[in-house]
Length: 123
Length: 123
DNA sequence: CTGACTATATTCAACATGCATATAGTAAGA
DNA sequence: TCTTACTATATGCATGTTGAATATAGTCAG
Image 1 (cartoon, chains in turn green, orange, red, brown):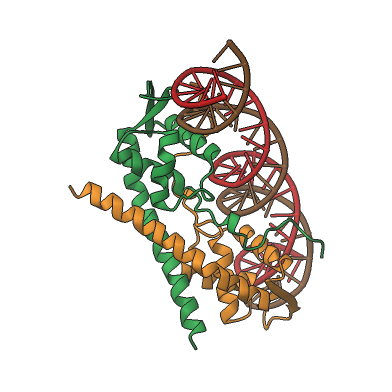
Image 2: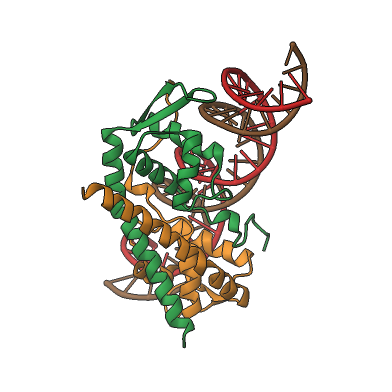
């Protein structure tokens, strides 16, 4: 059989797809924020240096704005260059609300896999 | 600002990426199985009709075989066409084992998002 | 022999992500 | 002033995952 492209259980591919945009909505639900400044806050949700790609961060923020889930304005900073400061919209709050049952289902499915595995291997 | 391609919080995009291959490894850890027959068993892990794509199922099984995580042989069935029956390999068991901490981390991160959201909205 | 069912497989397009790179303003120090 | 480091935003390319649609073919009942 010919080999097709693949990648094994590599730590680089354990990212939590689409969780970034959910976490961004959640952070912006709490307070307005700007790209660079959100990096540190994202670490609270497990996006450490290796897990967070700066390019993805900015791309995701722009995507959220295209969907009218957040809006942005340029603001002067006390120090350094201007910042594009994001605020969550009503649609964004609704979106975040809609994600909740999805997250709960994800959680339940993951729990079931873990439980089944541990049941099997404990024999 | 020009619009870029996007898709809103659409149920079709809430799939659990890469969970399919983990569930397949888990099912094959319990018993050998074949593509079509695994469809029903996957429903135990939340892969109902809408969540499971048959093409993805076969594609994923072949990918797992390329990675030597499973192996397959053709077997006659009591009824109907021959089946490509899959068995998990030692490497597959190891892979499944390696996924466990990743799943636990995913679970923890999802739980934190849920907890934070509920804390904010309960005010 | 025909249609329903079982079973496996592939192609195409859409989308998400990582990595690298580009751009530019600010600030501190030699 | 010049240079370097830092802050800040943004884009291009390659890779990988997925869904939908489609292709192929054997089995079995009537």
